[in-house]
Length: 417
Image 1 (cartoon, rainbow, N blue to C red):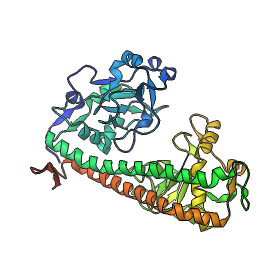
Image 2: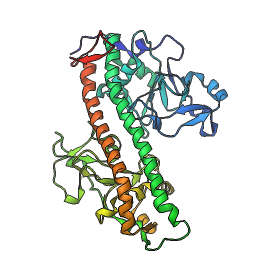
Image 3: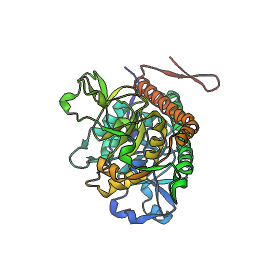
Image 4: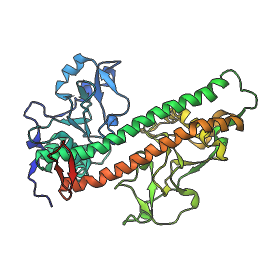
């Protein structure tokens, strides 16, 4: 066990006004305050698996930001949901805009840099221990929330290594996150490129009429759609034996400590493996309706996710990129059916959707162009999952002192001992 001194977050906050502060009351910053450009507002859905902000940003006018100035956050400030997605943490990036405003569902922490490296504290809250501290005073009745969020945050206790070692730990973990983020951005570029290719090959030529040899099909007839199995609590292994059960959380975050396992044999059609294409058809329209490439080996597929079975190998890339192309349509279908925040896309919807289908010779030429791009996306996803698993395995060992990072005297390098 570490013999590092214990400090509370209240002791580690900056000696400035509003170093710990909650977002503005909802009545002070409603959605009708949003403008096309101005000061960006950070919301819970902007928190990612790394340090980067993701998702769509909304903005308020500078005058409005001044009205809620205690909620303005700057580079290296930490922010936490106190309702909704409790247990998450984000950190304001050093590059980018000068300032942000936190939404009404967040609370912020400005650190005393003389005592604590903000990025070290960020990784503490990313650990199981830190997540537990954020969740321990939360209510799960209705929308999850913390009754006294600022008091709860202030009381959290952290084992604090010397500042130089804090920075070394943050550097090691940050380097892994940097590579994960680089892969994500590369895949975004590759996705944009392949969607542009798909549009030029298949969408543009069909605007006025179908070219000779092309046909029209229901989307449902373009592939097989195997829905996952229904799992109950008694199906899960207390010792994490068997195969992981793949839900929407695993599609987004990979296999984590929260993943359930099942050692009961299910029908073979519910088994998935690396390289399978999965279609999450139920959940929040804006965050859960999506098409994924699975990279983490064998697992059991949970319900509300389709495994896509391609009828012929030559059709795989066309159908995959067709589904990606139609994602906005799926989102709108789910949004139209939305109840209590959830929506869905059914087999009946896929039967109603009609699409073009080209002849084999065009499919083969398209495959020749996009297969290397698809393989690069898969490689990046697989590498990022491996790096994330390494990061998450190192995290508790570094934070507990079981594994020490010693700042090197030479060239600012670090070494693990």
